[in-house]
Length: 164
Length: 164
DNA sequence: AAATATTTTCAATAATTATTGAAAGTTCTG
DNA sequence: CAGAACTTTCAATAATTATTGAAAATATTT
Image (cartoon, rainbow over all chains, first blue to last red; front, side, top):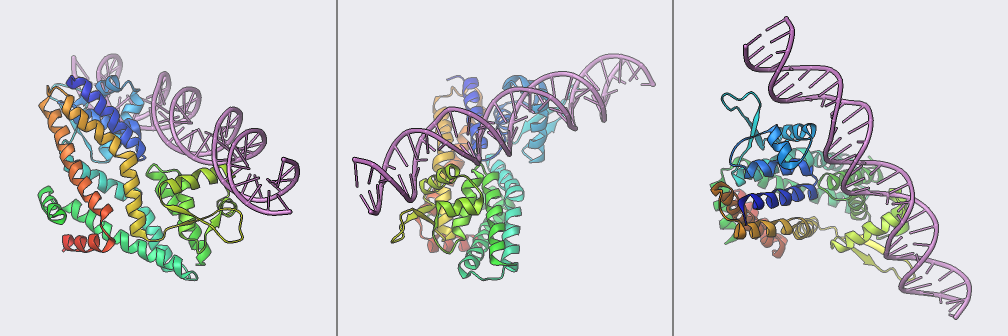
């Protein structure tokens, strides 16, 4: 299979993955396109490759930059902007985990924490549920924070140890 | 704050959480309702509590059963079905992780694996990306499998150790 | 087996989310 | 600073996803 064809399939698969996890399909497609590209691409090239409008391309490129997954790249002599994605898969995973935690986990955890403090404990089972959830998320958050702070090797080594 | 009010907020928060992670909001709301209920509920009670139609209630209850998060409960003397959700948060997390992996991760990983085998390696950077992804997902899958198989205490203890 | 209770299905509709494209805004160049 | 190149915004529209409600199917009782 030709590399170009494989890239297309990869872009489609990555787009579906994002889509099924609540992320705009175009956003993840652009991300996949840039990850699999050997050079930085302009908005035009992205529009062309994915057959999308300028507005759509622009919005989703901005979102990717906002997520810290894509960076602008200035090319000497060129007037327009070029974009490139990081290719270190551990760094990418770290970044996505971090952003999702910030955007789509923390707000809910804050609600649970507040309810735990404020609810009148009429139903002991419900009180227990809130307590257990807090304990669980505290542990999970610690793991994720370690993952965030750590360099790849540290976390990797620990993981291997955990699995042995 | 009254327990009933806290439960309502919890249901809303859990619904939003599901929604932002690509899960039907009604499905997660029903799950939250059942988790926070001290007794098994009938379809009517769920419809009433969440102000949803019978069809919607039925479909999402089935989905929750399919995900292994909710079970039917027969109540002596009652003709209709009652439903209850497991309340062990570690078990719930394990179940959700397992289902999501099966439904929304594995299909993509299969594509990546196939591409890695079949692509012609014209672009070394792209070949590396596929390889790195496979390595990453293999590690992640191992961790998740351990999490699946393990009892709570085993994983918990290891996690504490990992963090210390 | 007819009447009744309950569950399931699914076409129609509603609600949400994504996309377009053109106008407005910005930055650069001669 | 005028014009050209490029980027951003956003109202209109399209596409997708969720929900309803009533009919069909199934199960239970008399």
